[in-house]
Length: 363
Ligand code: IPM
Ligand code: MG
Image (cartoon, rainbow, N blue to C red; front, top):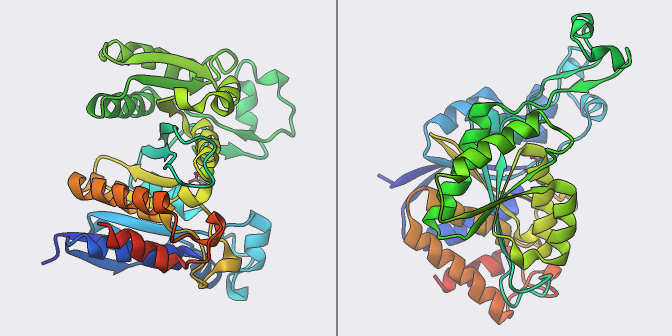
């Protein structure tokens, strides 16, 4: 029997290319994995009107964790045009499978480490080591949206200033939602001996929902006296992240701010080719590169697999294989430092799999 069962969801475009690369590295760890392929993505939207078929979710429930490739998504009107003619005009709506999976499995922690590995020619600086904790199930991603706004809403005090033809999306921060992501960040900081945790909000303007997040953070911070705590406004933080990124340590934010700073920080350490993401809940973990499906490169084995290899590293951590996870990261660091095997984005001409094999060689 394999030690771990892994749901294997390549998705669209280059998803298969990068997951194949992760597989090369995982197989070289010596740990026995069983990989269970699952249907997800644009092809299934077009055929079935569902980019995340129920059978895939059921299969995932029988696994320990999931590796997820990439997904193509398009605005609602374009998505419907590509639907199988038999399903058109039947009210099918496109939902991003990744957002849905985060909700189905309650994967409330989105962990995004952004470290500059010396030798990476795309680094902004060589001394960046930021870890982002992004709340992953609520905030403006609640999915509670209205257009038109139901009449009953207008009876709520304050609503009289909202135009009758407005569209509304609810930013939902719950005490439980705030508390668990803030705790994840502080627990991580304690375990990894990090010095500082910064909340990223706009509590001076979004007083009620971000205010709640801030109030809970201040309370929790007291339980971790060895860790410095401060709060930053999202806008100012974006400036400081460009000016002095090496001074930041652990950042914790509600969903949308977390999404935005994740891309900003990714770009500081080489761009989306390096941006890995862990989606973790109480009972499940899903690991993915944060980049898109880059359809024009699909199947060419040209793109940088490091983000996905680092996502596999995060999966190993999650499974409790921390020593092996560290070795994977050290192998990645070594390949980047030596700079002999590089994909096109790094100025080389190695393939996706060449780069993965080079990482595997140093394990
Ligand atoms: C990410 C992505 C997703 C998000 C998209 C693809 C729905 O940007 O994982 O950061 O917004 O969460
Ligand atoms: Mg994003």
